[in-house]
Length: 338
Image (cartoon, rainbow, N blue to C red; front, side):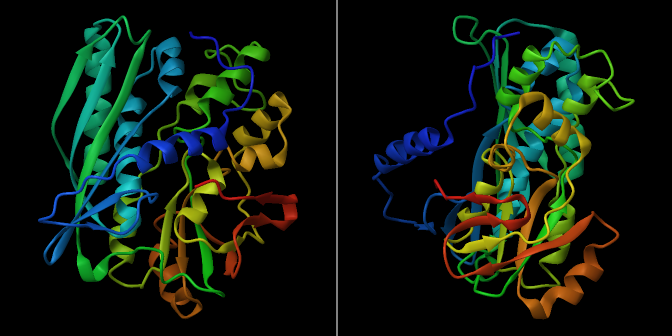
């Protein structure tokens, strides 16, 4: 397994890098337009009465733990989830996806297990995997890189942009399944420093380290596609890399998390083993909140009644005029780097 970095990822540096890159992309076709500004979770192309959502994402360094544990099916689910959970943030229904695999070597059992996982993820998201690319590039990658690109469609009149978010709106958490597919550079550093064996029991748990850390990412497609036909959603955020700093990507407002969910035990254990601060945890991991939905107060009853038996939900805070994310109980104040 590759040696993990000795420090947490420079999230601000990553944001600066991406911002510098995007500012160079100035050319646009003149016969159709892009809807909305860059920086969201997915991009929208105007095709008349409908818009096409397109986005790309990968599983990241979680694949290194999968390689060491020889446990690949969940990685396929992760690949689908990381893409479709971005697609639905604008209210778009995912339709299709292509995958991209950068390979160091060829292992048919890995191919089978990964394919099974991709198929399960496709079933969970109700989309077709219509193609992809596999490249054998041992001089570039030491293990494997797993990523994909998804497309979806949404009626232009039903697009959720985040612009309707206002002072007083309610913030709801949809529970994560665990770590999802983010923060694994930090996770691997903690495993190395504490000499954890992936095949032994995780501290304080009856499950193996590998089973807990490689738990597949939850897919929220069905829940969100159902709720947007019942409740007007003002904004949605997929809590991925950067943790709660993803929330202001909906709109530059102040998001006050007065009652955060109690995270799964894995988060507290990693925090203790890694000697991380609460602020570092909330800007690295999802902390039990895999997806955020913002609604107005009048929609609360219908929202809760529709989703209460579908996924664990919780009202975690409200929106105020201002900027950033504040979690008073944890003495956490996160500035926005997007």
